[in-house]
Amino acid sequence: MPDYRRAWHPGGTYFFTVNLLQRQRNDLLTRHIALLRAVVKSVRKRHPFKIHGWVVLPEHLHCVIELPPGDADYATRWRLIKMEFSKALPLTERLSAVRIRRGERGIWQRRYWEHLIRDERDYRAHMDYVHINPLKHGLVKCVADWPYSTFHRLVAEGIYPENWAGGDETELEYGD
Image (tube, rainbow, N blue to C red; front, side, top):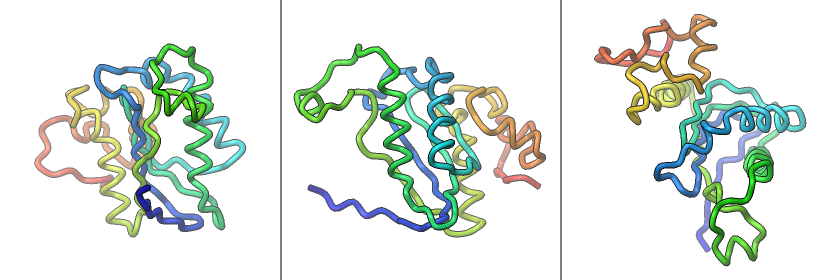
């Protein structure tokens, strides 16, 4: 069994990538965006965290979140988000014998990518990565056209200009 090393930093700010198991031609997350939002809201009530940036694509998501002081347990949060989202969906996916034996659904990849944000430069780079993702994947021609993102909230707060990453930039900047 691989030895996965995780960075556990109480009160830390983290970047995450979480993928569906079947990524090809799968729009499950955007098709069920209201459910995903409700599950995240429910988990946040019981296990608080601050959302700095979040984008949901059809088959994966990226986010930058901050845990409360003294709390490093992001694993419980992701376990609950994935579990509650999965339980709310009808069982239509094909399950492997291993997943059946473990009582798992065939919706999410078991693991996720996590990165502890180190400094302001790292934070800005990951926030930009979160928000540029729909453009990077060819889903839109400009970031403002993707509806499942905190980009719109950050524009309203004056963090990003509305035309950020509209397709004609030579260099991306976070805020002014």
